[in-house]
Length: 113
Length: 113
Image 1 (cartoon, rainbow over the protein chains, first blue to last red):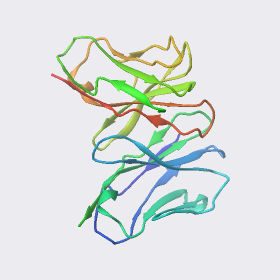
Image 2 (image 1 turned 120 degrees about the vertical axis):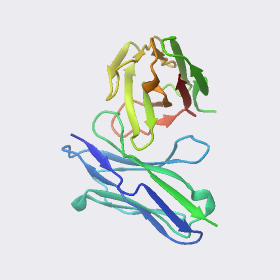
Image 3 (image 1 turned 90 degrees about the horizontal axis):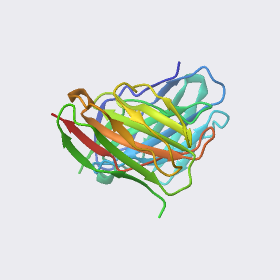
């Protein structure tokens, strides 16, 4: 059965610090997809990134970077030089061959000015 | 503008009074889904639809009904709401196929008294 674990329930950092959000997943499929979504205080869910199981290249997008490691079943998300606007709940999610998304329980990030 | 529209955004009702939350998308997506978000539990899938007239249960379908008579609409029906259905509900849509990005509506906050 599929499972996504985000062990960090809440994280607080001071502005400009780097922060890493952890995501560990379980799946029996060899083909799967991993996602990160952001939920700002306004409540909507915003798509950030998608990776497939065959592409372990790490990715950087501005201040955001993602580290996908199949060996440890992890898909971690790092924000460099955090800003107050990064304060949100971040969800990691997994989908297999169907479209259904399985979410972790989320990590609430608070960036203190 | 491409979007998923949910209505209403906020709803307070009483136990047993039937209600419908509407969801509409304008992206010609085949796949639509309903999730509920509860503190500490992340998002859990209620029902999903792979196309018109094709629906299936997610992880927490009890107490809910759905229908998909048109491609763009996917209403969520609570025939006899109970307090344990107080939650934040999200509708999402995507193209059918593995790994497609799901786009979410703004959410409906439901309180059942």
